[in-house]
Length: 414
Ligand code: CTP
Image 1 (cartoon, helix red, strand yellow):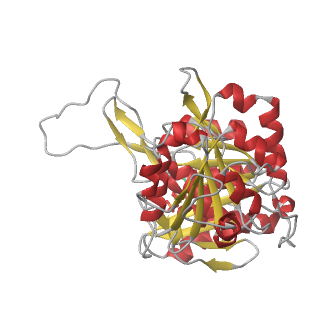
Image 2 (cartoon, rainbow, N blue to C red):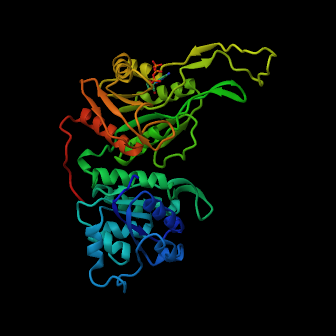
Image 3 (cartoon, rainbow, N blue to C red):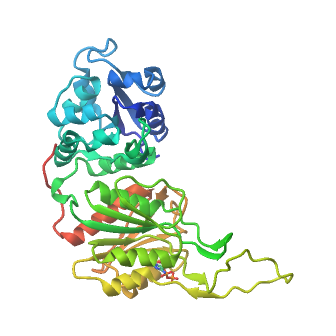
């Protein structure tokens, strides 16, 4: 369970997306968290407090009868992290200014400087793009607040744009990162850094109804893209076909085959500072793909002629410019360490992230992974099994050390 025993205060504020809050609270409780909920008066127009109370102690007022005295100080000290989801435009403005006029604001304003605050804003795109909101978000980011960008899609007003509450998985991923890393350290934010991530499988067509592929779910690559985004990087995610929702706040390029992935990556590789090649690229594609469905020939066997696909990572490594960092992945079933060492050197990577199907928590569909990181400088680090988002944070920590070898703690707290 990702949040076993973690103490989380969840704030619910006045956005139509507040109706999703009970699902979020239930998911946190399911994942083992100890949750308390604070709700603003406006949010009660969109969500029945009883639905939240079913899962966790819930406060609606500034002076709740059931918690007399300075309950907000006690709750703020109790929390290991506070998550406000959805976070309304009004709440963003009040957080920037520090106005404790609702129950969520009371706790947020009393939060110790070392306790991370995670916001998942949701509002219409006009409000998200308003200069007042943009200013509040920038100020909060500078103060070390974690902000999950809203997703693109259909909004309550009927228009289509950026403003939707992101998928729960996205929000919970950022919360996990906040619990792991604490208040965001401005010194180590990746503002302005360009990160390119490949993810998912590729599909190599045999005919209009069949393809060669593999079991990659894309979860590890998507988690890495979201982790880099949360550090402030400009992220491009080049993804093969997956069932995952598009992560908000990243440039998303959908491809199908290894050739398409190679073209999309090579077009963008020169401007990237960090390249993480997580995709499970299919190594062999049919020499030709039939424009019509292939039919049984009547014989018991069929011969497929395959040719190798472009090695994207090796091509990028050959063209790399000074300062560019390259992270490769190696998923193995046997001879793990030898294969990973070979890929590190033959493919010209700075880091190789190794996982094995033989290691307990690992694998394509799993939300968890067990990784080891091998560096060109000669170190090997083995990490315990954790969620893919936590693994992503560890990988970025290794990248951060390559960028600035003295990387440690620093920066200002909120
Ligand atoms: N990779 C790539 N292009 C390919 C194949 C692999 O960019 N055509 C990248 C993967 O994204 C990964 C790394 O290379 O970062 C290793 O991939 P993997 O499939 O484990 O290795 P292969 O190159 O296929 O080598 P082998 O067949 O020996 O396992």
